[in-house]
Length: 118
Image (cartoon, helix red, strand yellow):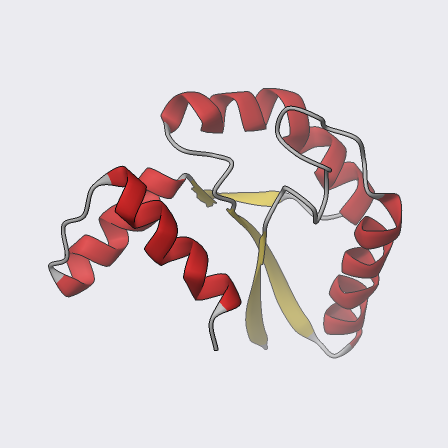
């Protein structure tokens, strides 16, 4: 069976923003449907986090306490603990695989561009 990892952004995807956590139910419904389609295609789905709103371990704790359960309930899928990654975690992975060392400000711009630049 094939495994697909779905990495969620938070802001403007599941919630309005970190400081304004209004639930974006229509977008969450669409994400749930995509996950259900993958499951119907005999795909194992893993759920992870890739959100620049989550900078560090403290933000991951806040995510786990404040948002995780609601998202898991809405998507009917649990996050894989090892795939809940902060921006610092992602940057560490990039550094380990590429050797690049950047300031947090530059990292934020570079990594944020990955989601927009094609």
